[in-house]
Length: 215
Image (cartoon, rainbow, N blue to C red):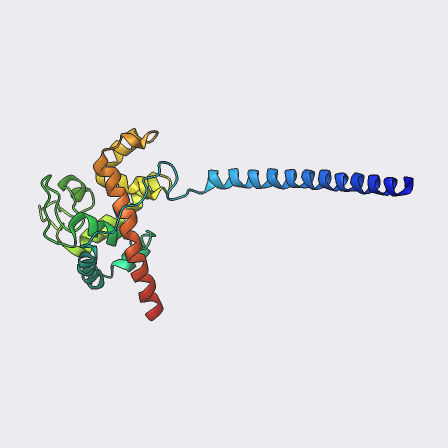
């Protein structure tokens, strides 16, 4: 009987030692992973970090608009432009989709023109309106390249945060910068715009994958 109790005590003691050892090892592993996570967060940026804008819904006319945008895309090799400027697949497609529904002659009430809806001052900055006054905002290729350059600047400026870049394209980088600590203060129009673009991108990422598979 005593021998049996001693055996049980020895087993419990050994098991306790094992648990303590594993706990110590797990603590070391956790500390290592925590350090790695801290390093990654300092050196890399999640495109959707910060304020969570979320996603919108696909609308009944999105399929029709998508076909119009893809027709223009094929003519100007829009997927190649996205790759050249290291932009997420489908981003420029989604922006054209949301901004103008693929209408090259679109003009907003505020005066934005073309498939990517450039205002005159931004168009001048990116060479769409020349020094002689020629306006190329309706030119699908030139406006797409200008939009790509602008988005590359915005994404870099906001540390790789794609949602902030999309918000800045809609509301202006100054306004987004001012509200960087509280994105809830941005206009509802801008927050809904980001949701829509984040949603529409997915439609064109699928198309791009299909094209690569068939290529």
